[in-house]
Amino acid sequence: MATTPTSKQSASPPACSSLRDNRSVSSSAPLTHAIQLVGAAHRYGQQAGLQATTLTIETGERVALLGSSGSGKSTLLKLLAGTLEPTGGAVQLWGIDRSLATRDDRRALARRVGLLHQDLHLTGQLRVIHNVNAGRLGEWSTAKALASLVRPADRDEVLAHLTDFGIAHLIDAKTSTLSGGEQQRVALARLARHGPDLILADEPTTGLDPVRSAEAMELLIAQTNRTDATLVVSLHDPILAQLHCTRIVALQDGVVVFDSPAGKVDAADLAALYEARAS
Image (cartoon, rainbow, N blue to C red; front, side, top):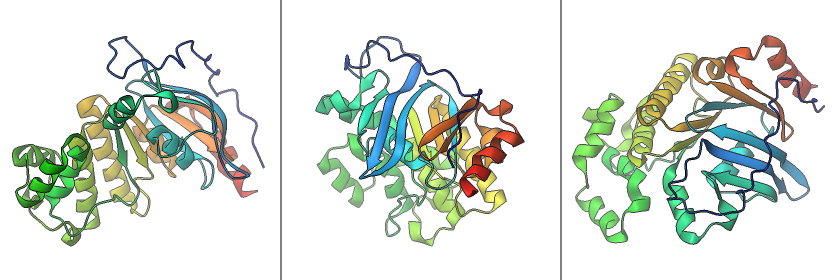
């Protein structure tokens, strides 16, 4: 059963006149918003993954996406990451509509966006240093990438990132031999190596016990703080969302049902979100 958006949902911002201007990623024009969706939607055949959504996220915000499986969280993240194209409306990052962007601007946007996947996407047969350096592959030539497999590049920089996450001693370890918690820190070090302005994290605590879930979120927030990055993270645990994020956007059946400062989300909001889906 769909839920009518509550009064806590923010008013839909108007479509800005520059939405289709497609200005350069390197433009010096100041922008306070990192993300703007204007009527953005995606359909999987006859099924709506995300219905027409208008949403603005300011630079530096920590936004948690809440909702049951199938609510639209992953579709929204994929639209922001550029791995899905909108079937309606527009998705804009830093004033750039990706669907109208030049090839060079698309590459520049990709360099500014970092992904933390649920399954981490590490290569187990490679050493930790190679997995961390993968955060820079988008900027390296093919020759440098191949050469780094033989003699790893930028060892000192990788070591600095691993030190931030408490695993510097594992720099030469085979990644598949590490514990789950250690592998998660490697994935975060790879994200730090990338150095994105926008971090998109898809269920980073799924499958973790409560202690490791809290640790994973603390490490993710620490990395966000180091670079003043904007964070959008999908979560199943409302408590983690309220503890670590400044804003909560709740989805149900591809629709934003409330959008509120994290501190103002109460038990009734959460009960309505999850109980409506169960019914």
